[in-house]
Figure (tube, rainbow, N blue to C red):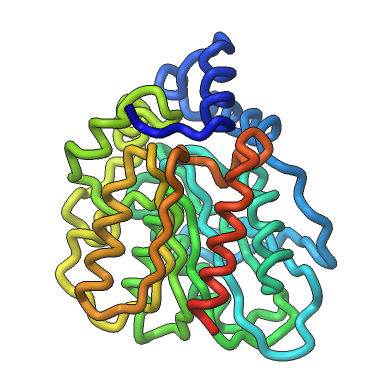
Length: 307
């Protein structure tokens, strides 16, 4: 029997006792609203910041909405953390990840920009990656909206956003001044099977049926290195990585394998796994209080990685 933290068990029991359709049983628009409501109820309040502003980033299919977070206004040149939200490339937005991005900005003392890339099924693979690439390149150019010169980028994201961060890091290594990639329970192998995918297929928030629903809408090419960074052939020159996984996550083994591959190919890696924790916990820190410590541990690791 897998170890489950007490606060995780309480949240899972509460959700199981609440009669509502599963995400894979509804259309994408309904699923997006369900996710907004879940994070509104189960997430912590966002900490106060000196500046929070919605901006627009030039993208391949028009302007990409984004949100800028600054705990204090940088006095001079400084790095930027670019955040790609999770949600299976189908759900999630600036609101679902607002508290998390504000918390990162406050604790890291760094400019954070959250990117609201195009979602599936309206835009299928590789539209989300193309938007995230455009955003990273634009931010590296120190646009006036930031208010400071940019010394480097940290590419970060959770779940589908972790996939996007890994893909953008791979595509822009050697082109952009990348300081690190921070991959939070990332999906990095679209052709994976067995292992944690089978062990935690049901009962731990992210389910096998849910993942199949996301895949059907996003329609990635499993062999493409943007869809499955773990299956890429080239591993030279990637930025240092912080990889975080959860013990009860169907995607756990993919994150473990990606960290191991980075280590095998000579890259600096900090790997952290939260025992007894579930996928999606970073935006459920109100309902799962122990997830806050998991986040603070990652931020401490990230500071060490880029020091």
